[in-house]
Image (cartoon, rainbow, N blue to C red):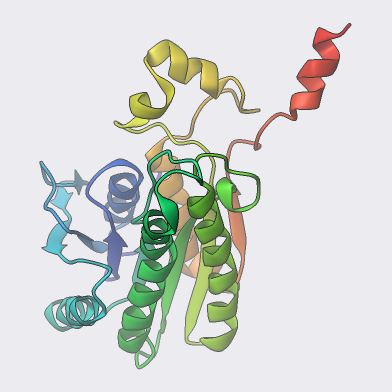
Length: 258
């Protein structure tokens, strides 16, 4: 990955940064020079490393506000500062709305909307007193702006997350900038669970205008940019990282009919 900018001396937290997209973001921040702390309920199978350095891991349950406040206080105390938070932790199983009832769907909302709110509030407490303030990046999804059958609660949470970021950007300016990276499909070690084998993944990738799924490192590049001084006047924005989005189905239908 080509380093977008220099984040040397900055301290960044990536929630859910132990695998997949989160690990890609953590590596990008490491390569840009930042000290990186990842968190999740369970430690990674292997360290997240880049540029001959490793991210630090601390366990935390993001659904526990007291534990989250203690976590961010520890990071700030141990490293002397907190500059960047990337709210990446999230996800959902495939579940139709009539399956499982409201309680199961509410847990998806809790993980994808309330947990980032809890983390952002705790991070803001550490960032707001610093002369340089800080940057918070939400990891959103195209599911928040289009129908998401099988993941409706996830889509609703991601829509709420984007709106939450815009409101935070106003309330916390000028100390803390808040933006959202809106993702399409990303190829990770778990892609086969959603799209099948390599041929299935490639077939799904062909539905994207750029012809493939994103790489986690490319998501990381976007996060590094938004965390940097090069984005000093960007706040309350949503950056689409989706390869051009989705080709409208009516175009293929019209072609097939000819």
